[in-house]
Each structure stands twice: as C-alpha cells, then as structure tokens.
Image (cartoon, rainbow, N blue to C red):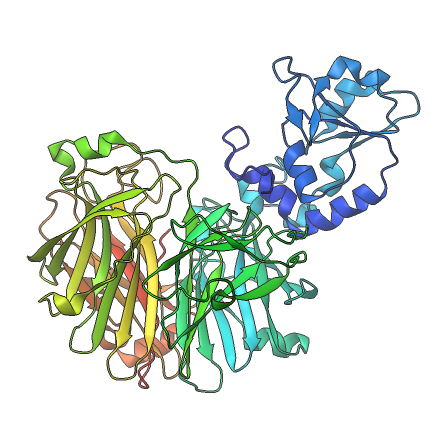
Length: 623
C-alpha cells in the first residue's frame, strides 16, 4: 500500500498529497531526482517524506527532523535522526522536503556538510499561472483538481458537464487546465479552457476533444485542474457515457472523489447474462506493482490479485470473471487498490447495452459508534439513506445494502417506504446483515406504485453502526431491458438538532437545512430528469418551498418555477415538461436548472432519458 496521507489536518485536508501527485509536479520531481547527486540527505520538516518517496521512489541515505519527539520515527524507510547531526552525514545533496521551503533552507544552511548542495521542493511547484492563491502555495484552492474516466472508442463517447459554482464564492475568472491520458498513461493532449465568468454551465465532450487534437480512439482518463477557484477545492461534475452512433447505451456517473483509498466497495458481481469490467486507472506517476491490486468477494478475505504491473496514469480493464469466475449477482465484490487510484468506474455489458457506474471509498478509519443506537428523540430516525422507487408500471427497482467500512461486520437495517405524497406505505426489518450478505430486495414484492424508500438503522436484533451506511440501487426498464444503477450513503436530514457533523451543510457548520442542486439539461433526443426526495429524520416543514431556476450558458437565470414536495415525499422533475420549449432553446446546450430551497435539505438523483428506452441515473451534486 502506498504510504500516503490523503487527509492531514495540519496541512489543510489532503493538499500536500494533491501538490505532490499533480501531473506537472510529477514531471518536475522527476527532473529534480535526475539532478540529485548522492548521497542524499532529506530534512523533513512537514512529515511528507513518506508520501514523496512513495510517489517518486529513489534511494535516500539519511532523514533528519527538528522535533525531538520525532527522532527515531521511521521516515521514507529510515530512522529519523536529529537535525543537529546533519553535518556528519557526508551528504552531497540535502533536500528540504517542503514547498515554500526557503525559510527552512535558510535555517539549516550552516549545518550543510562540506560541498553539499541544498535544494527544496520549490523546484517542483506548479507554474504561477496555475495558482489560485499565489501568496500561499499550499492553499487547498491551488489544487482544485479531479480525474474523470474519459473515452471515445468502440461506439461510446463521454461528456463531462458542470457549472462555474466557484463564481458564487467570489471567483471572477476560472479556467480549466486539462490533460488527457491514453490507456497506456501517455499524454494525448494538454490544453486550457475558459469557463463562463458567472455561474454558467460548461461541458467537455470526448468527440470534440478527439476532433480538436486529431486523435484516434482512446480509453483513458482526464485530469482537471480549476484555476481561479474559490470556496470549493473539488471539481464536481456529471459524466455521461453515451452511444455516439445513436446506439442503445446510456449511463451517468458522479464525480470521482479526488482522493485515493486502500479499498473500494459497491462493485456488483455479474448476472449470468452480464459482463462486468472494472476500469482500473492509476492516479499517480509511479507504477502499481504486480500483485498489489486484488478483487475479493465481500467478507471472504480471499483476494485474487492482478498479476501485472499498471504503468503511471495507465488504464486497465479487469474482467471480474477472470478473477472470481464462480461469483454471480447478488454477491458483492471488494476492490483492494492500495491507495493507487481514485474512485474507479465499472462497466456492465448486457446484450447490446452498456452501462457505467462507480464504486465508493471504503473507510478504514471508522469504528462502531454506540451513540447512534442511543440518538435522542429530537433526531428521530437518525441516519437515513434515501433513494427513488421509480414508477412500477415501467421500472423494476432493487436495493442492495453495501458494506463501506472495514469495521462493518454487521448491518442492522430496516426499510421504510413512502409514496410521493410522503405517506409511509411499508416498513420492513431486513435483519442484522453480515458483511458477506447477498440480500438484494426487489420492490416488486412491495405494494408501492412510485415514491422513495429509506434505509435506516434498526437494532432490534443487535448489531453496530458507524454512520457510513451505503447501498446500491438498480433500476430496470421493463420495456427495453435498459438498466441504470447508482450508490450513495446515509446522512441525518432536516432537523435543527445536530449529531457530530450531521445534518451536513454545503457551506458552514451543520445543520444543513438548504438546497443547491445542479440539474443539467438534455440535448438532442435525450432529455434530463431528476427525482427529488424530501427526507426528514424528524418532523420538519410540511412542504418544501422549492424553486426550479432555469439558467442559460452564461449563468443568467431566465425563468423559474415553484415546486412543493411533501415532507418525506418525492417528485419527478423533467425540465422539458416544466419550461416552455423556447426558454429551453434560449438556455442552450450549456444551460441547467438550479434547484434551490432555503427551508429544507433535498436529496436527488438525476439522469437522461431517450425514446428508445435508454436512461441514466446517479446521485446529484450540490454547491
């Protein structure tokens, strides 16, 4: 497993990791390494030597620290020595493992061994033109970055869609620095794009990129760096995969969560008539060694490894049947990735239709929280995981709880089902599920025409909870056979009382009691839709006071429509049925609907539909 910290409160989130892992930093550090004359001594004032040499391996002869409490710790595989011992090291090069390292370098200049050269990581800084805050390099806004699965091959194309939400926080000129890698990790293209000055929408289409740069077919990844960001250091987007020649395939996935994890979960085993491919994409400039990545049936603890190396920034297709040939739905698969990749995508082929969805980060830093079983009455049902039950006449809906933390050996769950008007129509105890359960509940067994359901904790048979409750939601069109799926986790919703960091807020401390959700518009023969859910852990306002705000590509609001959703109810929102066609045409291809509510926190799932029975679905993002 890579010895990297993706979260570090001292440095502000995962900013040091992102500063080291940036593709341009990778190029600069490679040049820095090539220019080092050994022996090499490293002064590690900020505790980043492990991450630096995990991502960019090279021999190190000694490591020094100034904190006496850190002397004797293992750094970069060596025992850290007291800084005062540096003069006796015989080093020819001394590296200060720090950005903005000039002061640290000046502090130790008199301790250098004879004829030693002093260097810092300032030689690996991004160009000033790529910084949002030039006065502080390790500002998280300088690394508003993310990866996207990006493909234009085999009749399938991808389109990334988002909006300049940074403008809502004061950003005045945002640009995107973009680098496209092919399947071997080679650079196909690097370019910049401006986004609208206001809160306008934007998109990046693989077909347009391919034409612009004269590229052949590719399946790889797109690195995205927002320059001039404010408020948010994460690049949020929806990614559509569609059949570029009017075929049947259509799917949508959410942004990639820009941090690597040791394990991921929520990967379904294939049905007998399906093929499931995991797209493994190396997020770093260091190869993934053979035998590092593995697939395992959830809870089995019998991982089967990938026997080959994966090159820097390369993409590998792993057919799960090659590793777990006897495993079929509803079994679940765990991915062990050793912190080499951000949230991967998986692709399911069934007949002539292909769909893509994502796995989720499996937490290794959680422990069971006994307080969840004792939540006070003002928090009502506590943690809820809401998801749509699509119109039964046309769609089959299935839910499968998914363990998403290493500590989850039991999942004590109940299913509460509500119609669109917020009336509870069904409640069912699912049991205290083991980690390796194979429950997949089909809503054809429940008498509800349309609405939503919520997974909640229920301790009647014991069990433990940690708040990181997840599930996979699968929807099948009874007419066309098209399938879409999504996954998400639980939160406490719509109560003024708080527990730890819940109910979460998009901005500021909890409780989160407002809504800003992004719904892109459709194009051509595909129209967009969203299922909005008003979940409530405890009683809240009887109805939402929701506004659907239609924006054009510059971010200008050109129309709005009111919407009232009953507490614990839901609503299907289809912009082409709400707004006049002339208004939608005026909004343009980059237009979108902003779903606003200052009285409650809504949760939603969005996608596209076409007349051929294709549809996509994933959870919405807000800002």
